[in-house]
Image (tube, rainbow, N blue to C red; front, top):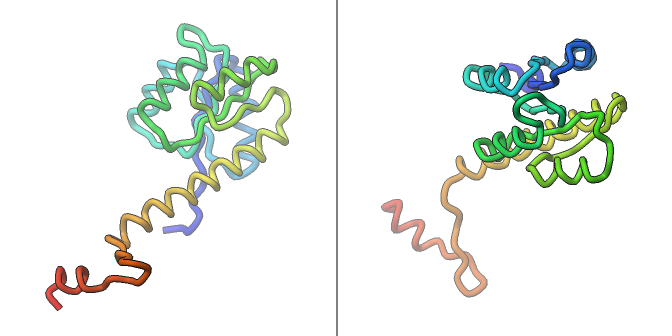
Length: 159
């Protein structure tokens, strides 16, 4: 198993040209990209695949990107969500962050997009490693009046 597997991004943008550009751009930076053009298609992809980051446009048909972000965050509190949208007003960015996104990059700033994706995925992977390590190490030693108390641990283990 590779130590640093290729990142997987689910991009949701209803514009076909934007989807193609995102796919080519992300793939050229070593990121496996799946681009879908609706929230319904995104939900189908999420039912059978896992992703390291969700990349959303704010303007989507039927369900807007902000509502979909809230839905994603309600069911997945760990995977980073990034908006990449032509809606570049501060109020749009605030709405995205309030909906649960980890960041917001205005189109067409591709340099900021790649940098933000890389940082969010790296940070999320670090958090996963930290959670896994905490779970694997088991109960911690207790402190009793400033010194470590090993008696509870020793008697519990039968030593």
